[in-house]
Length: 131
Image (spheres, rainbow, N blue to C red):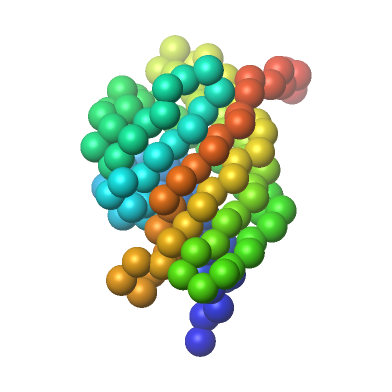
């Protein structure tokens, strides 16, 4: 049987792969209806519908993401996951912006599966040397 910690690690991996594939519908299934996303310098993004609207403007972008999970803790039907995330976003003109930083996600087991209910994303832009 799969452990809760492994299920949460799999959720993070599914989120990244679905984001890279542009599969917003799959990403939406990984969050609660009343999810809240916190990002530096921005108002909280509340609910799946707000996330869906934000993703609509990203349809033409190529996303590459790498996750380094630092900690997963499970307490009953709640858990948190601390993750160091690197995301490279390439626009149609070929320009790439890379952001990296810590992310702290609070998860809840709903209907037998883990979903993200709160997410504090502290990614900031990083300079990447040309190769």
